Image 1 (cartoon, one colour):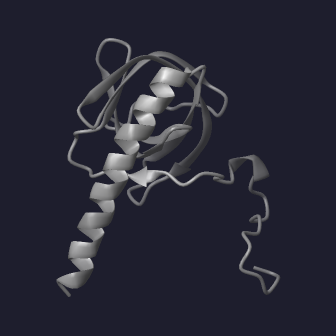
Image 2: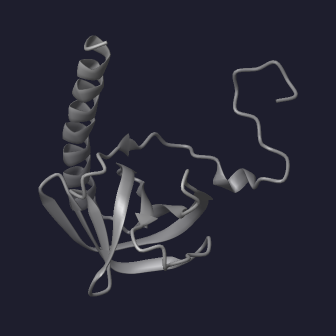
Length: 139
């Protein structure tokens, strides 16, 4: 950082288009939340909000470019299944193990799916915060 500020400053050489603008609810890495593309390709969902999700390729074989369009995706989350989703890869970065993680922004979601997704996400956020509260109080 070159300025004394609490505002996010761009990193030299990094695209300003990749700055996250929305908070996403973290997802437990227990395999209960997945994105399915095609017949069998599954991606672990790392975090989610109604605008999109963060995913990681479980097999390490898929390499999406920024701008890649995704269609006919199925999201399984919070006991619900959201079929026929469309989106676009809007950013990618490396995780701690050197694998790719991707940000997928939903497109053409529709009011009903948006409302259902918001309900599931509110429940997941409450669960995540209660887990965090328990972890802190145990110390």
